[in-house]
Image 1 (cartoon, rainbow, N blue to C red):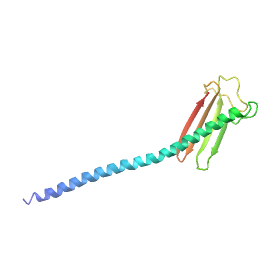
Image 2 (cartoon, rainbow, N blue to C red):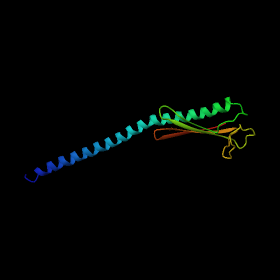
Image 3 (cartoon, rainbow, N blue to C red):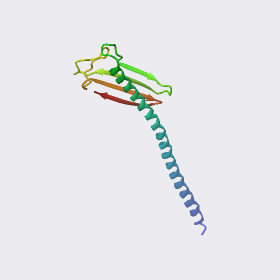
Image 4 (cartoon, rainbow, N blue to C red):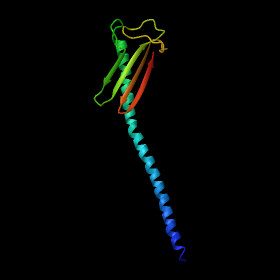
Length: 131
């Protein structure tokens, strides 16, 4: 009888240790998921900043006359600390490039290639348009 008293204490310690280990594992997963969910919002802001850059380049191509000088890149910082950098290049098969936009052999579109990168916090998202 005296030897069996220590076994119940050992059993309780082992069960408590297993429960504690499972709780720590669940907590670790929860913390990682919470961090990922917070960064999803940053990813959306980055994506929409990149979209704004692509739209800025498209607006320039369609609204500024071809003979006027065009900027091949635009950058802008927004009030929420998001930003974009958008670059346009003329296709290697296009016969008419706007004034100020360089022709690139890597652009295989019919007319222009637009690349835009949006940044917010530490997250970057990019969009590429070929037309």
